[in-house]
Length: 265
Image (cartoon, rainbow, N blue to C red):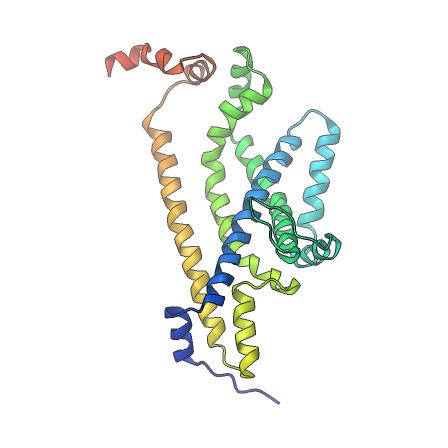
């Protein structure tokens, strides 16, 4: 027996042009979960990438197990596990105190994302010539300072494009938290359809539209960021040693102004 599927275009238009307050809250939850989970993923990915490049074997082992575990299991399963093991109280996350389902979704998505971000950040770090680190150390910089001030700023040009793509994926993957009762965009459409006891796919078409709006806005922002990085890459070409000296020396701007090529300009 087959159910007749219908598309109520009037309903689609109404939910796009005149969304309810409940829908607005669901949209906010989707954005909040996506942003916080992505920030958590970047932080964990950076830590895991630095542990991966560490000379201490235990750090490298922990980093490898982390990636193996969270990239090798479905994120849907991870969401459910975090939901079941979290204590039955709200948790403070970035100045907000979300409910247990939202907190579980953020932690699961963020930790899972960190495993993918580790590979992106590691690739960005590996793309920088090892001579950069050696030159920084020859000036007396420690490993941490050289990484923070020499390697990571240059690696950012390699990291930003795939990072933007990952955030686009995060906004779409956030719909999986509906399985633990989080009221976000997909849940709103599902609830609306269930309440009407119909097979109308209009609510889901409207949700797809709003996901397209979110991802399109972010794609525009990402393009602006990449363009700015490209301009900074080609607009001020200096040598490796000059860059390291300018960063290491107090009053680096004064040092730069004394370079011969600056005087000729």
